[in-house]
Image (cartoon, rainbow, N blue to C red; front, side):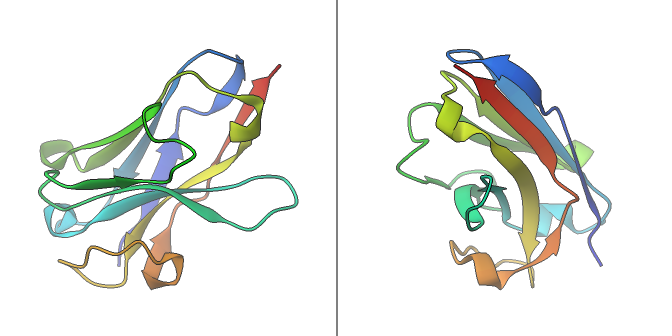
Length: 125
């Protein structure tokens, strides 16, 4: 079982930055790919970024590429999402997630079985 807790959300003006953190409770954190997803108001949940268990490979949605950076600290069981140049359309609840098994790098939302409670990010224009 993997328990995830996000933090770092808040209200920011367009053009600003936020850094989200996700703390994981599992001893096998360094064996899991990790993902950040978001759900804008009234819309479906969507992929933002994923990172391989080693941290050496990442993937970004086109809408955030060049503005967001995913990273991880395996020694402290934490994954981060640095968000720069924020836009009002980035407003959403942001979730971190782990896939259903270790050593599984996937961009498919439905392959992720473990989810945090979410943290609200609101970008004002």
